[in-house]
Image 1 (tube, rainbow, N blue to C red):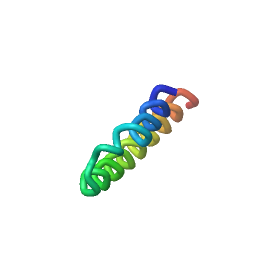
Image 2 (tube, helix red, strand yellow):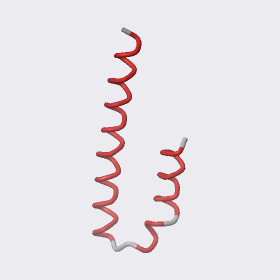
Image 3 (cartoon, rainbow, N blue to C red):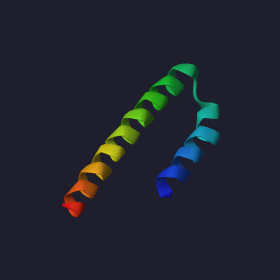
Length: 50
């Protein structure tokens, strides 16, 4: 829930003041971060279910 609220705040508020180059970098980093969180969540879920 906290991750979702942080992502909404990033998209709604913080990106308005950034230049286009900074927005691109921010979206790429946010995507990598979301993939990493997903990977770690899946790994921890698999460990607890085994």
